[in-house]
Length: 75
Image (cartoon, rainbow, N blue to C red):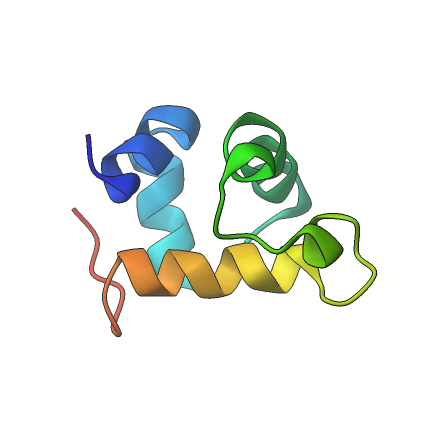
């Protein structure tokens, strides 16, 4: 399973497409992704997970752009 597919399995296709179309991430989606996926993701620096050296919301948002390609395209 790719990272994109994993994210879709967590938040659902409709929420994923809404995220892409609106280019905004709600607090609810952030919490769901953080708790169910990115908290264990090895790429997120520890200091960012703890919001000491970075913003975990921004890290997840940026990561979503990376896994969807430079320009987000709905599926």
